[in-house]
View 1 (cartoon, rainbow, N blue to C red):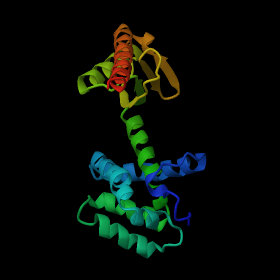
View 2 (cartoon, rainbow, N blue to C red):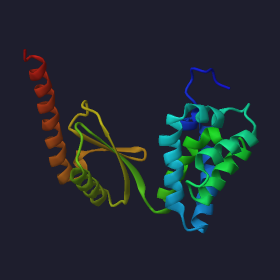
View 3 (tube, helix red, strand yellow):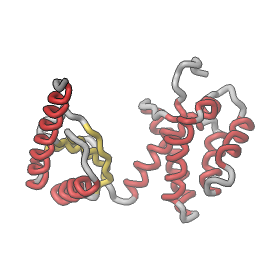
View 4 (cartoon, helix red, strand yellow):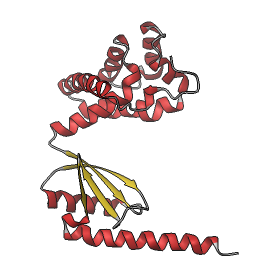
Length: 211
């Protein structure tokens, strides 16, 4: 069991290669079961919510899930207490399978692997868009559409903000990084985001200098 001050692995993905491979095995089994039951997306959403929203707010449950010293029966009881009647039967069954194999501590990794595997099965490439300033919904939709068209790919996007991004916009599709040169539309957006970032920085400085 990790020291009491350490964060549980139940709500934080681990980058170890062996862990990732093992997580993918369980993710594939969960997706297959959920697909056969016709509720793949719903099960993914429920598991993701548990890993990223519920457990971080219930650290005692997260510690139980991650601890090898807690019995399978106790973990099963905790699962039922938190989830029974609130999630689909396939979701509940998946959690009990992880508990029986003492893998509940890998829940965040399994959820991440399941999301990636689902995207692969749907023919989607994961794309991370890093912008100098936050984008609204319309801007996000446009930049994804422009990038997908330029690259000839179907994308599953995520967005992060980094004011230090040169040019205003960087796109990573799996292991390949693109700047806004991939399309004219992205060039325009990149220049616009860069200008917005400069203006926001200047505005904050002006406010700090105001008595």
